[in-house]
Image (spheres, rainbow, N blue to C red):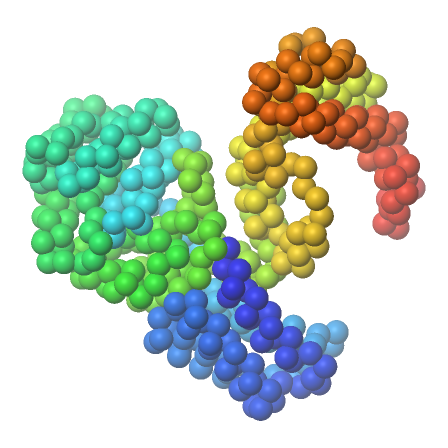
Length: 453
């Protein structure tokens, strides 16, 4: 995420290494690089000018504090100004209104409104126990209606049918009436997008807004979009009086322009970033965490929260208890771990939240549990019989051929998994002999002072 911007900002700060004081000369040189990095990331020019002026004003003459280098002082200032530019932490939706509360999603075509509608519905159902209904008024793209119906079924939300033969305004009015009859708490309306802003689209979405008295009007914007998205944000804000923004595709190699500019351009808060294609991939917006990731510091807090939310604590406790009792780690256990890794978005999603220096170190290491490899390994394990998963020592040459054929891989892939599994078994066996401390000692690791007592 924001790889190029992160790299450019890191290079700019490196130029301050070895300096004893932040002076106007070295500040100007560094800020020139920061300015170029932001412009290349498609941050709006007025936002860049305001940002650079604020950083320069704070950095000039800032004395290096004890144990801090000029680079660290400058990073701190950059971080605080990035947080300021992106606004307050996302407070979520304001649902304090007579139900059904109507949430209108607007934006350009391809921004991800339909998927976002489902993500938002699931978020409200999971975190606030709301009854949610979804409706699409995008009659210009029948596939969007079908997609929303499938997503609603997937997450267990109510779907109000619509068809390309109906007028968008009629669909919205009928959906609101249906939501009232069904005692729904929240109605999410997925509107049509266009490749570019035009008067017809704005008139249509404004009419729908008036018809359903939308309580929340959210602009959905692609994080990788550039100036066109910001121009669209202005236009939609004028037509709808937006109440918030949702960033999509924030897990991609985004340039970051939308994330850093949309708050300044619209004056509306960023509520959620979408961080993947799955319906679970929506999280509250934390500007300080995103600023840390942009500056290469990682986002360990979000990583811990993600693990806590995704890992089945009961199953993890059972596995730990099983190991401490000396019972072997088998393929059922490995499959469970791989599936939980997938539920967290895979290795890539976890790596994205680590500091850049750790990502760089891990990049040169072999990864037997990459996202594609995890899928392949689960397929191989699923091709085993129950006895084979519980007793891997039963797997001989003929069984290997059968497992390979059943999972669509080569025999050498099965052999590779068996070898990796044997190594993991050894590690788990060490864990059972004295827990984590014992395992680290046997692996030759040095415990921090105080932990080995």
